[in-house]
Structures are given as C-alpha cells and as structure tokens.
Length: 154
Image (cartoon, rainbow, N blue to C red; front, side):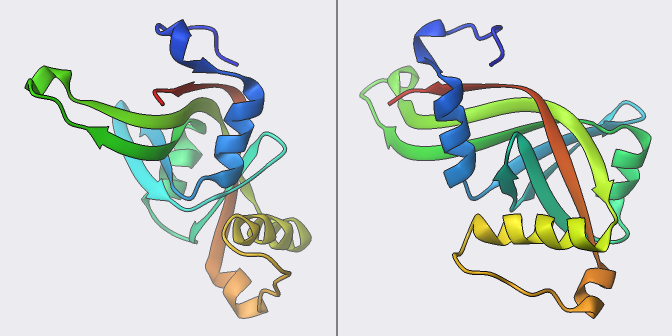
C-alpha cells in the first residue's frame, strides 16, 4: 500500500484494495507522453496485482504506452451523494483505489487468450473462446501494479 495518503482515517487495507479491484467495472487509466496527459476510461480484468485491458491494435493508447509505459489508474465504487443545507457540506460516499504501474503489451497467443479470459471473468462467469480473427484485430496490454492505496468515505 502507498503510505502517502493525507487522510489516514479513510485509508483501507491492501486486502480491501484488492477486493475493490476484483469487484470493479470501470478503470480510469492515466498515461503521459511528451509532457501531455491522456486519460481513458476502460473496462478491465484484475488478477495477481495485474490489470488487463484490450483495445484496437492501432491508436493513441498504444502509441503513448510505447513512448512512456508508466501509468496511474483509479477504480471507484460509487455509493451516494449526501446533500446538505450548505453547498460546501455536501459529500460523497465511496470506496476507491489509486495506483501506479508499468504497462506492457501482450503478444503471445496463449497469454493473450488468458488475459482476455481475465477481462471477461471481471464481468461474467464461465469460460470463453476467442476466434483467431478477433485476436488478430485486438491488442491486449497489462499493467503490473507497483503501488496502490485505497480509501473510503462510507
């Protein structure tokens, strides 16, 4: 876990951080190249301190990762907005994970199928087959997590 969190009273354990990543549905992935930030919203899969993503074989994400493979990510479980009488007293109930890691493109046929299976398992149960044509048209990359921190305002 990252120890730099300002609100220690909201910090969650590494076990809970993993739970949030295992249950999450949407990941915000932040990339940077040539001094420019690039943020994308993606579905993902999570297993063993690694996030898995898929995208088109050509495009900005892969170009940016090729230039700079360091990434930041967040997954948030939204709870509810809690209104108040004063605007500055509104708050949000949530649990979230913020982390850092290194992205790598997955090229091997078997590893690519395994990664896509992990992504599918995030959203559905069962086993899946991936047609060769689909695999050929799809890029898959992983983010090996180097650090993360989770917090909650529930």
